[in-house]
Length: 294
Image: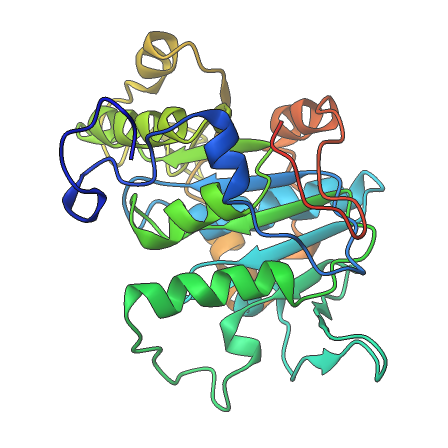
């Protein structure tokens, strides 16, 4: 609790968001001693159903194609979709008999994947856990999983500004956040909530990606705005954030996700975001060291 606060932290709407940068740093969870992650990128949305996991998968695939070693930490514990999108199945294994830790599974393209669905007996089993337990699992995915030599670790967060996004931004050394939105009137409020949460926790927002921006007719090539006119450029300008991409509604891409073949998609929709990510300095967790925020 900060000196200027007059109430207890338990009922404070800014709990976890107050305090100095040093206090925030003290909340960071050290990684597995065998991990080496250079950059941690959180993919965030203020509401569900905007395609956050799709954007995470496209970014991970784009960076892997550019020659980087990439991992995806699926922090959407109660609604995991990353293994399905990448076609990853099976059970994770212990790293070895000498050191504690488990290894993520690899996709067909060599992307490391860790998700609660890889720990469940049946992937359709629901995860009916309270917030603190879910947040604890996310910390374990950072601390107990061996993320070896990852140039980029993408964290697919659940929607909103609740326990898990708070845990990720406080416990992991997040180098940047990409906010995913859709072209609807309430998007400005959603983006504002996400930006303000990031500011409270001293986490830099790298930019915005708008999903489902339009549908291009396969017969006449005309663009149809299914969700109405977009105001994303105005919103990005208001918050001094770059608009990294506007993704169309693409049935072929949806089919690839359903088939677990996202890595075979050849579109260059997120190339601008990939270029931005390549410009980020290495601030991630070094082997055996406590992580430090950028």
